[in-house]
Amino acid sequence: MLFPRIVVAGCGNPLFADDGYGPAVIEALQEVDLPEDVKVIDAGLGGPHFIFTLLDPEVTKRLIIVDCADFGAEPGTLARLAVEDLPPGAYRDAHSWDLAEPLQRLKDRVEITIIGCQPKHVSAPDFEMGLTEEVQAAVPKTVSYILKELGVENGAL
Image (cartoon, rainbow, N blue to C red; front, side):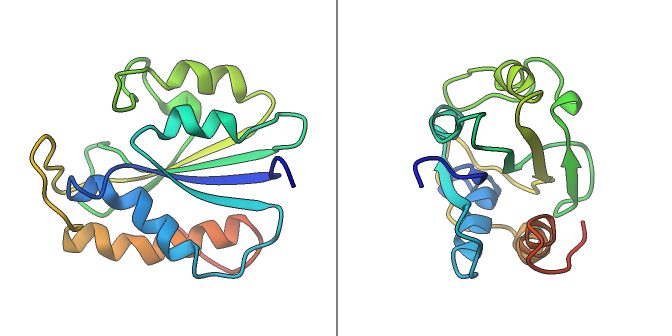
């Protein structure tokens, strides 16, 4: 399979505390038996650039992005966000590329869901390995939710 029907991409950097939420979810999902047409990828910091190389709108029908996101909630709170929920300029990758704009162009051809987790602590630019307790507790909840979205298991946000 050159292009998957569904891409689940975890964004973030485990070297910066709760910024490692996306990769932690992907690591947990890699332990689950998923349908063959689902690609689960740790997209890291350069994720947005990498994600777009995995998509062919003729084949790929769904993109689920997993990332920490500051939406003013209690640490560890999960939110399902649509591309429209992203304020222009507010969602950027490590190279300060505004991701909302290319996602806006893609959303009419690929269903895009962003699963955000409210971080407690992001240590960048200082290195600090490990998620806070609140965000670590959100990882299995996120996995359950994604499995439900994929029709594999029940789950809820």
